[in-house]
Each structure stands twice: as C-alpha cells, then as structure tokens.
Length: 285
Image 1 (spheres, one colour):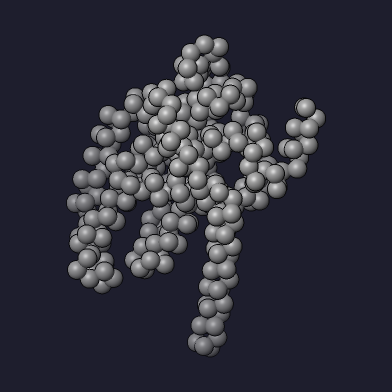
Image 2: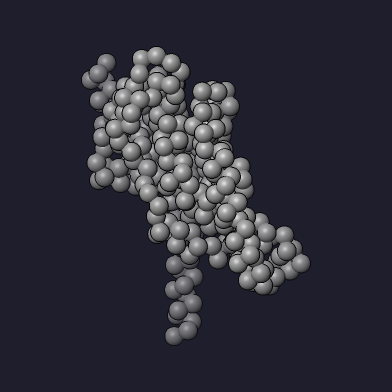
C-alpha cells in the first residue's frame, strides 16, 4: 500500500511538472514576458504617464512603513527558526528578503485595491490614448479632445479593477511555504503567482471591449502561456521592495501596450488563436 501511494504521488508530480513545462514553453514562445520591460521604457519616455504615480507616492510610502514594521516584529523570528534548517547561516539574510517580499505582497494587494486603483486606471487608459486607441477608451470613460494622454481622460464610467480580496491574500500565504524548498520551490511559487497575476492584467481591456465573463474566461484559457509569461515577469518586478509601486505602474503600461498590439493584430497570439477578431477586422476594412 505505501509503495502504491508513492508511485501515485510520483505520477501526479510528473504530470504536474509536464504541464508546467508546457506552460513555460508556451509563455517563452509568445514573447509576452517582454511587455513589462517594454512598459518600463515606454513609461520613462512619456512623462505625462508619471502624473498618476506622482500623486500616490507619499501615501504609498506611508502605507509601506505601517506594514513593514509589524511584519518584521511579528514574523521575522518565527520564520528565521524555520529558514535555519533550510539555508543554514544564510538564513539571517534570506529571512530578511522573505519578510520584505511578504510585506511588499501585502502592501501590493491593499494598495492596488484601494490606494492605487484610480491611478492605475488612468495609467492604463492614458497609455491606450497615447497609442492612438482613444476610441476603445471612450467605451469606458469620457475622452477630451485636447491635452496630453492623461489630460484627455475624463470621468470614468466603468471601473474594472477588483476590490480587496481575502482569497488572494490567503492564496499568497498558502503557497508561501514553497519558498522553503531551495530553487525549485521558489520557481514554482513565482510561476503560480505569475499565473494568477496574469489573469487580471487585461481586466480593463476586456471591459472596454464589452466582453462577457464567459468570453473572458475562454480567452484566458486559450492563452494561459502568454498571460502566465506576462504575469511572471510582472510578479518578479513587483517583488522588489519599495520599488514595487513604480513597477506596478510600468506593468500597467506594459499591459496596455499589449492590449494595443492585440487591437492592431500585431501579436503572434492573436494571429494564431483569434480568427473571429481577424474576420471582424476584414469586415471593417
């Protein structure tokens, strides 16, 4: 009986490993992981997109300071006791990094749901306008005729970004122990986080397109690899302590750039798997 359970466990582990290998290969081939990087350069070269970030820096720093202190006070020593068995003398430093990442995750979830919601919305819409996609933005908010990309943003008629999710926070800490497994565990943790992160990057785009929940789910199911690739790259950037707020905005810019490319039929993903959109484009032409 024990041998049979071991064999079944090995079989399940192999199946899961094969699935993740296929997912990683699909993500690599899509090139979607490059969009968070493109978002950084586009953000740096378009100063009008800095305005939403600048308006939230001071309150964000206050939120971060209010979280990181208690996190070190209450969680550092208990986690150090565990990490010593995994990393030996290096546990002093690896535990610091772990607490910093945990703090960044908590701050990210809270800030994206409350503090940064409107600013990220303006950043996404502003990027689409800068990419000459104002007709799409007009489906979800008023668009003015004058000014730069951000100044043209009027009153938002629809707000897609979800509020605080207890499940998301629980899910983060549920998978956190994977980091105690050297290398493999950390990689698995990041990929799992990346997949969850990727599923939400185009919430605004789907809303502006008027897609139903069913169509959105179908699209995400067909493109697990590309969205996991984007989400993984975005997660890695947002795991950097303090700087995570900047990367939250550059990742939003990257997501908007990706949406603009999908609209322009410039992505391999769309060419390969969205014949209905291509057919619609031909009719317009």
